[in-house]
Image 1 (cartoon, rainbow, N blue to C red):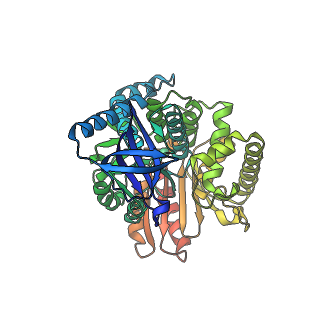
Image 2: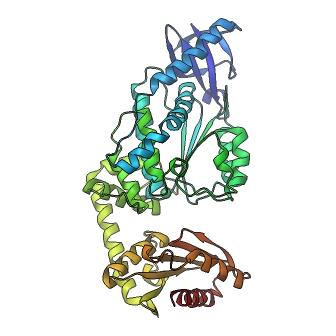
Image 3: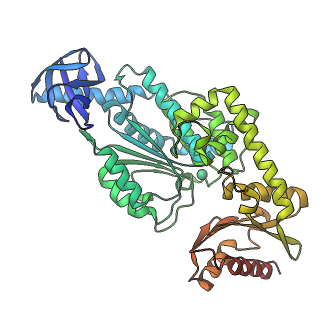
Length: 471
Ligand SMILES: [Mn+2]
């Protein structure tokens, strides 16, 4: 039979080399094979296979055969795509999905092609509920496609990377390039980015990655002028289609996953809306559970035995399917947060500004000195502001500090009245020797200090400016 070596994974010695070969034997199948011979990506040959080994390998440059295989790869990639448009039953969201559908399908054809040829695929997702719910849905769709596709007779070469920041740095890109260097492939590997911000800091990473990868970038942050990611061929963001951040990146990834396979993504989509406080969120019992689990797992991967820093959707799936384990984890998370909220309420400092209260909390004081990483400070700040709003029934502002970070959260009602980002910027320039950076959203932003020696003064200055703004 004829075969095209589409991809080679070299792990060091000849015996551990995997050859991904598109075999054409009345229809194509991509198989993972070994060989005593040294094969190269792009080689077309008459070959024989026994026990997972390529025995005979007679190279040929038969142009017609090559064309036939190339066509068959395209056809099998198309055949792998069995899904369609995701309809959640929320008109505002479904309208945006419909507009994005052609772009999502075009990107999915690229992913299906990479799956067909056995190319390496790096998928980076933001380590919050939104990013991880999207990754989980995409994992399920790919697993379903791999299971039902007759053409894919190998385990996909996917490297999942949970990503702790919202920018794609030069180091991230270099790491991804190095990881793909064990592969030699007939075309570029694929990089998929889920729920990163639109920070200019990503430009350096994008510069490196764009030459080495085909890139699919799914996000929902407002697109800023200097961000290079928006020039990518497969950059998809609801802001470009009349939507905004309420259409979450996890939701977008669910819509993307749904074009590949007709799987149930409703709970993941809903969890992403919960996680990012989307105005379209209508939580049910299942999505609440999933959101709570993802919140815990992404904050502290050590709660699952074996996970060290990185967390894969497969590991998420194992926990979700284990009812007893997930019940135990959710109970732990709920108890811990509620104890910390109670403690926080009694230890916040309160400053009055007109009818608005400004709260300042030392996070280390309520976290205790144990080893627990859950909950992360930023997410705890959002929960605490919610609790304060409930108790006071009036808008509030919270400054939560820990080490050299200050997280600020402000009631949405105050947007327009208080320009939080601008205030933080002013403090940044007043204390430029001590403040490293400030940024975020109009009601949730943070300050990164160079050290913590001037923290009190910086926080004091923010409080003063907030008081002024509130009159
Ligand atoms: Mn998000």
